[in-house]
Image 1 (tube, rainbow, N blue to C red):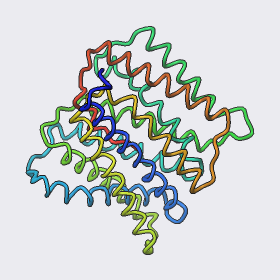
Image 2 (cartoon, one colour):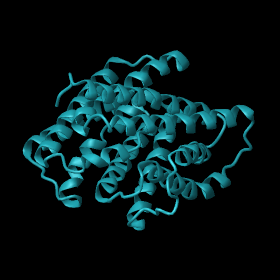
Image 3 (cartoon, rainbow, N blue to C red):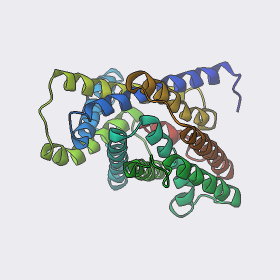
Length: 302
């Protein structure tokens, strides 16, 4: 790693910019869920995400005929991303965004557990210790024996598991199509899966709802565009620590818009989960020689 290299610093800057825009997506989703069902909000996220990707695809003159390989795995990848988004939006509907996001950060731990059997990656005692510490952090955040425990926050844990499977399917696939086209197909899968559920719970949106939905899709597309660009200047090992910068924006926006202030247990749990996640990710990458680093840019943040 060379964090002082100007090219790497440019990549880090783009990564920070990308992760700073993701919380806006979550805030708009939470605001929309006050008036619309979570199913409709999830469909809206993928619909407008796809809409914003179209001009980028046209601008880059991407060949639409380049259908992704392994359509079965592509569908499973899109399904896991859709479920992760659905459960995450359901969690933030009645819980603070930073708390749900903290629990979503268990995904690297779940990836480490499942990777030996699904990806053939090594799992050693240090990774195991990191995973145990990470799940202690989950218990601290959930506060299962406290008066503030909300069962709905468990939906964020389910989202983290689905997101981990999405990461694993991304690593299993070979991608020959341009990244932006792959992202478009992921959004299309989400639209198709969520459409029946959205129709069943549909509420005709007013102008405010349309604008919030369009903004949600814009920030989804913009954040990943910056992340893809970041990987043109720096490697996954250099950029991965900055994935967690998203929580800074989430806490800031939640305070400004919803008046949220995290309690001490939430802060302690956050640092435990992030610390263990960073350690486990580093250890897995070290054990496996940085394999599949080029696919990290195709992993969409929630």
